Image (cartoon, rainbow, N blue to C red):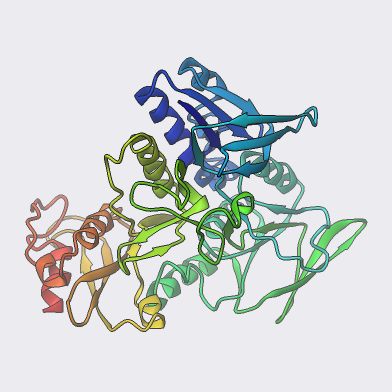
Length: 442
């Protein structure tokens, strides 16, 4: 069996390692356009901020490790054409420009995603950079050494983590986003308001509800970011506007969403026989709605990559879907979210209710305790839980993983009130705050 894999980050590495172990007789060839594999891009801000000192720790595999499994890795090879009907691909060696042709019995598409780069006037000026891969992170670190005024465009997870890292390194930081709130895809207004206050209290300038219209510069280098509402001086600009699937190769060959995300079934099969996809290049069932959705997360990618290998020869394990569960630490605040926000659910026309509690994480007789705010969103008719958000200075983020399981198993908010949780004063109250939310909803 000849297995061809295109792309080798989270999903690709998981698929390759598992396939090599499951099918030791298979001939596995990996095509990767970059000069490295398996980079943990979620660690970029920690690397930029100096928390992670050794970048080697951000890689969990290498061509040498894959070779030990019998895998052939063709680095700096860009796949330029794929014929899924006849099972043929062509790739270009980016070092020599030589083109090679290969055949496959099974194809695994793990091409990932790429940052959205709008063609804004002046976007080609020097010191305007993206934040996605290892080379980007090194560029950011080098350019930040000489930069005093840094503008980050995009208030998602990556943008938020970067502005925190830059501010902690003594930089003057501005965060721009076209939406009115930071992290608006992940959190409802009461949570983003608290997050924004935290950022502003550390001197970060928030320029929200405004769109970048052009970049201005001198001597070929950016000096100013102009938006619909203002102008911001900048020595360095980081673009973190969002991501789109890297799937141009397969347009017209595979069933996709409007944004180009490849649609796969529960066994990671695409619409073409013997062609599988995983990770940021594809969409999977989103359990809060039951519909396919594009949710590019490393956790989804490694699960999907592992399932590709398990289901490559026969359908063994179905994907249970995703809740899009994620978390972030912003200064002292620990934040986690799963499923739909109330805002998103209402925008989709869903009939939902929510319950919000503000509790202490431990009994008041303990010498110390912290505030915790938890919001649970549920269907008004069935009372099925569809989302939750949490914020606290105490690290209670694992509780959101618990609610993720509740959503996956279609539990109701009423059942949450009586789930069996342990009590120990060092950790919680007799009624766990998850129980409290369920009881309050009743």
